Image 1 (tube, rainbow, N blue to C red):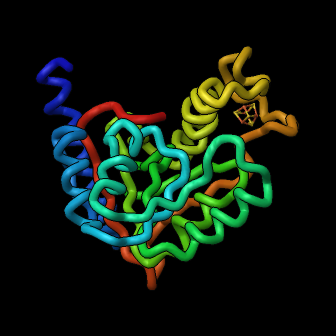
Image 2: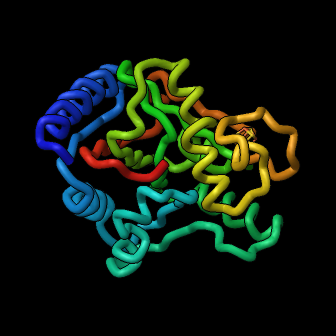
Length: 212
Ligand code: SF4
């Protein structure tokens, strides 16, 4: 990336971090994904239980494999699981010590937005695991709530629909059609305005484009 843009992006992340801290979310900015990944491993340590939803950002950081290697238990659904198997896993993830997730948007005022099809991740980031680690690349930062609500469907959801090979209208239209498809993946939005009292958060902002 152009070094001037990188510097501008770093300042944007630093300003967003200040806003998130003001909202009660412990936040740190990292120059790259490798440093961010190391920080997550250090934070979690060994022999912990960790719930995870599908996160391209966590995948890019290689977190699942590295955490397992350190003796941690990763609780997440796998392709091919049926509905009742998924629900069982999601309830277990809800009771894990840690939860790792990536929001689809963060406003520069320090609001965190998560969109979900089933609600398991949207629920776990607000209630359940006592420690939530939130990972986000600079591409997730938006100006305000309106842009955030637009982004989570018109950028993040479309890319996820393509990734998951869903036959939803946005895949062809290139914009959200607010569908009523049975395969719709945009059913629940969690918005964190301030830190929920009994949960600890670590927001890790990375000066790279990560995930959707
Ligand atoms: S068209 Fe449906 S699945 Fe696609 S982004 Fe809009 S609500 Fe989500």
